[in-house]
Image 1 (cartoon, rainbow, N blue to C red):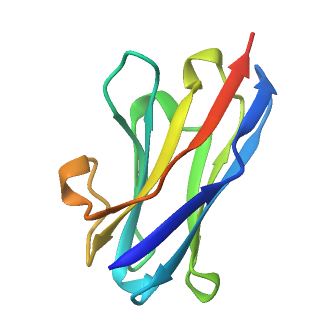
Image 2 (image 1 turned 180 degrees about the vertical axis):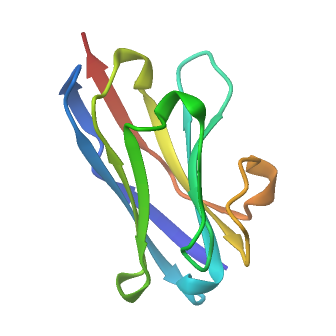
Image 3 (image 1 turned 120 degrees about the vertical axis):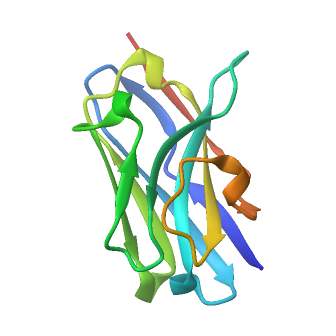
Length: 124
């Protein structure tokens, strides 16, 4: 079991940047693939990005490719989501999730542990 706490959300203008962090505690962080998902009001949860537990493989939804970058620092038990060129349609609550020995799946059902989320709002 691993506990996850997201931070770094906020209000930003379109074209701006934010860096989300997700700090993990509990079982060895390096054994978990980490994912970022988001949910906008009235919409289903959506996969954003993931990184394998080894850190060598990443996966992105098409709408964020070239704008978002997922990375991890196993020494600090933290995963990051660097978000550049933000658009109003990126507005959502962003959640990080952990999948033991995962490869970076885009399916939320693969992830056993979830954080509480952090709000990202992009104004036009």
